[in-house]
Length: 243
Ligand code: NAI
Image 1 (cartoon, rainbow, N blue to C red):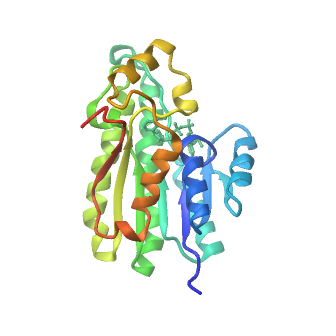
Image 2 (cartoon, rainbow, N blue to C red; image 1 turned 90 degrees about the vertical axis):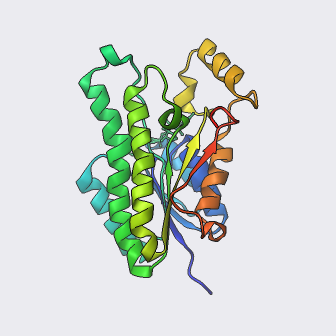
């Protein structure tokens, strides 16, 4: 019997990441996920919802922590087939008032974190000449959004990073793609005021917010065999909000 594929999902304790962990576990992957929550309750909930999945507290912006996390995964599982870079944060504010620390925090997690995880993961994937990397970008990285200069820049950066890595890793049969969600019902968007949510729904041709499982379905497709000839692409899951 073919050994189970091994997947790492960053930010897997809730929201979109949790849905990705659930889908990949259900389709037979051995899943390792990380998060950076203050307590481990959400991690345990994800583990219960995705039997076999194992969670760890790892800050994706911390180079040493990321390196040891991937070393531990390789030691434990002996291989790595799929990496989903989903961990992300927002620190919204208007450009003229944005604090440097809010710029740095978002760019560190949302962009540098993706670079650090890809660097460690690609090294392991290259040994077996097969891999799937899926980065979670955002409609905000494609279209921009007021009060999100830091987040828009980081997510646009993720799209550039995806395309550069896709070209670089193609000779090793590692594909690199991005998914760009629109507005999705998760803890991240629960913080939005009601009028902001109403306005987003009004601007979305499909007239609703998306679900974490709808984003996870796109991630699962790009992480599987059927997407073998797709690399360097951005798949929008946004109800038509940006075309
Ligand atoms: P969420 O806030 O519900 O979950 C974020 C996850 O990332 C949690 O597991 C958290 O522990 C983890 N995380 C945060 N900082 C971390 C760090 N430094 N190291 C490791 N893990 C860390 O977020 P949600 O909504 O599920 O978003 C997931 C991804 O999708 C993010 O990259 C986000 O930018 C992106 N996205 C979300 C949209 C939405 O409408 N919810 C829209 C477009 C993109």
